[in-house]
Image 1 (cartoon, rainbow, N blue to C red):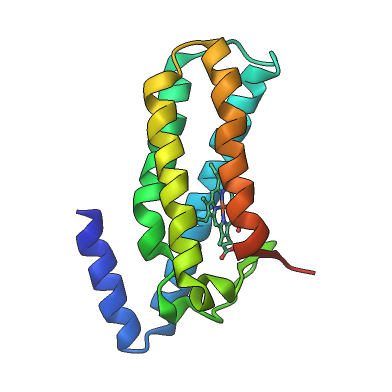
Image 2 (image 1 turned 90 degrees about the horizontal axis):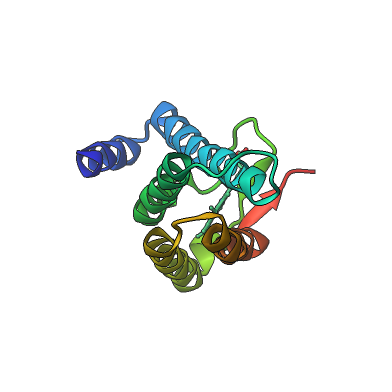
Length: 148
Ligand code: HEC
């Protein structure tokens, strides 16, 4: 289902629909914002601010997994240079260093898959969250720019 939407969106871009491009950026940023919220929810458990809750963990990991699956299509060529409100932009390196970006996506996907099978309690969450976080920041370091 998602694929069909993406294909439709890509077709809309090639027709030069600026509105569709902006929708795409919004969708991408929205997905990343959800990643941020989920990562914060997991980190609250690790810090002991919230009790461990498996269903919250599962939902967060499922959303990371969904992100990993969608990342290869989240930054189509047509999104290059499209600017919206928000604190961040994708770095031009997303498009100039495609191979590097794709390998970041792959390693993120792998770590999330591992975490899905490993995280069953607070101790395993404590072990896995930094591993996931490293993937998030590893990609952001190179491929995300904070707007000045
Ligand atoms: C393969 C690369 C990659 C991975 C992995 C990745 N991100 Fe991102 N993220 C980006 C890029 C690129 C942007 C900038 C997108 C934009 O603003 O157009 C971004 C933006 C964001 C933003 C800012 C959204 C906004 O506009 O306010 C947050 C929050 C975020 N990511 C959280 C996360 C978290 C948490 C993870 C890990 C669970 C993660 N990301 C994994 C590439 C990645």
